[in-house]
Length: 205
Length: 225
Image 1 (cartoon, rainbow over the protein chains, first blue to last red):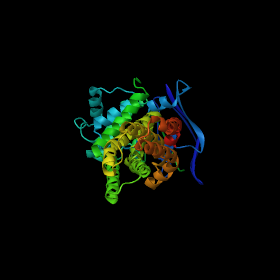
Image 2 (image 1 turned 90 degrees about the vertical axis):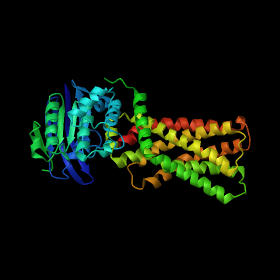
Image 3 (image 1 turned 30 degrees about the horizontal axis):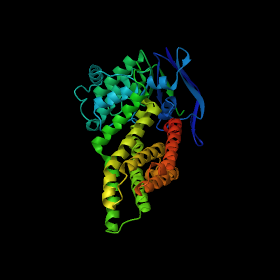
Image 4 (image 1 turned 135 degrees about the vertical axis):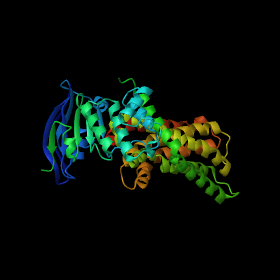
C-alpha cells in the first residue's frame, strides 16, 4: 500500500504567493484532480510533488506501508505525462521505450513493447522515429513510457492535450485502469477529466 | 524487477547519446570543423616558416581546448533544448546520467583527437619521434578536459548565453591541466623521455581523480537544482 502525504505545502515566487498550507493524503486506489485558472500553480504543484521544484515551506512524503521511500524507489514508482516532457525525436518509439525501461531497471521484451504500443494505439508505428509522429501520437507514446513501469504514483498534466476524440477516450480508459493500483493526480482544466478522479483541488481561490 | 545496475543504466545513457549523435552528427561536425579549420589556417599562415616547439605544443592544446568548448556542452544543452531533460530527470539515477554523459564526451573528444592529431603533425611539421608518449599525454588530457567540463556543461545547460558561459566557467578550472599538458607535450616534442614528464603526468592524474570525485559528488545537486 503506497501513500502520498503532503503537509502544509507552500510555494512563493519572490513576493508572489502561488499557494500555501496545502495538505493532502492519498493512498493506493485514490485519485485527485487539481484545477485552477492559468498561472494558478497546477504544474508547479505537480513539480513540487515530483521533487523537481523546491517548496517554500512544507513536505512531501512518499510512503510504502508507512515506511518512507528512498529516492531511487520514488523514481522507480513515479511517472509523469506532461506537455513539458518530451521524448527523443531522433529515436524510434521502440527505442524510446527500451531506453526508459532500462533506466527504470526493466528488461523490456519485444512482446511487451508491442503490448504497450497497442495499448496506446500505436501498433505498427514503433519502428518510426518519434520526430515523424504527430503531436497526438507523441502524447500517446508518453503514456506508453509512463505505463511501462506500472507506476504506483501517476502524475498527469493536461492529460488530454493534443489528443483527438479517440485519444481522449483511450486516456480515460487508461486512467480508469491505473486508478485501481496507483495514486493518480491530474492537473487539468477540462471538466470532463474531473470525473476520472475521486476529489478536486481548486488553486488560486 | 530492478535487474540493472548503475553500469547498465550509464551505458544506456551513453548508447542513447551515441545513437543521437550518429543520426545528427551535430557535435562531431562542430568539433571537427573547428579543429580542421584552425589547423589549416595556422598551417597556411606559417608557410615554410616553422614554429618553436613550445608554441607548437601550445597550439595543439589551443585547438583541442576550443574544439572541446564548441562541442562538449551539447550533451546537456541538447537535452534542455529538446525538452527531454525532464524525462531523464524523472527516470534516471543522476550518477548514471553523469557517467553516461562523461563517457560520451570522452568518445567524442577521442574521435576528434584521432582525426586532428595526424593533421597537426602533417600541417605543422611537429617532431614526431615520440608519438607513443604523445598519445599518453593526449589520453590524459582528454580525460582531464572531460572530467572538468562535463559538470560545467550540466551547470550551464539551463542558462541563457550558454556557449559563452561554458567557456568562461571552464577556463579557470582548465587552466591548470592546460599548463601541465602544454609542458608535458613540449617535453615530448623535444624528444625527452618519460622521466622528464613524470611530474606533470602525476599532477594530471591527481587532477583527474579530484575532478571526477567532485563531479560525481556534486552532479546530483546540479542536475536536480
